[in-house]
Image (cartoon, rainbow, N blue to C red; front, side, top):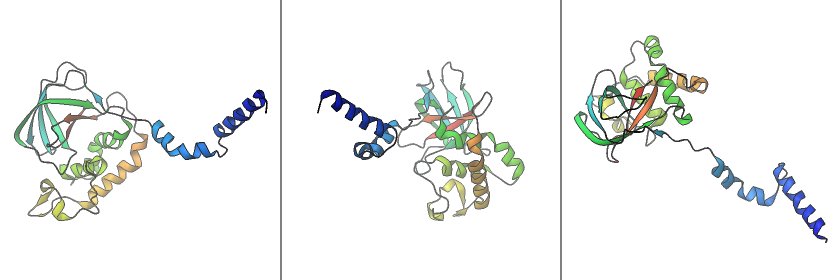
Length: 219
């Protein structure tokens, strides 16, 4: 076979593969290729916050109140008291004036995988009007359900395994029905949520590995 014919042959094979006609080489590596090309979305470190000190206390309007000090100069978060929520529901934290130093802060603004939680944060006032009986406990459980680490499935987790903060006298101190309604609204609405000026979004506090991962809310 002439060199030109050989070249034409391999070029034809390449075109067939690229245009979607089955090709053994292509199919054998398809899964790895898709995994390699899958977009990687990461939260963004907020410059200057590597020496932040946080002090954690319980409150009545959110799971925690977090006092931030030493966040440095940035246009996302300032020193002061902010609401606090938990992501790691199986890891402890000192919530009676517990102080943690050298904490880095990360922004979830425009992070696609954080869209459900950030959408939820922006409809909380609407949810309070719709469900006057809702408490911070339903909100916290919704957050665990949306993005907990490890995963949190309210439908399968036993009462014994529920975190103590959402129980009273050993029994659930929240409404399963309200949590499910909140999650249904987030599921149906978060796809249309747009990151734009004035929206609320989560800022994550990178606590030590043996301490709950926390986040606060900014806009």
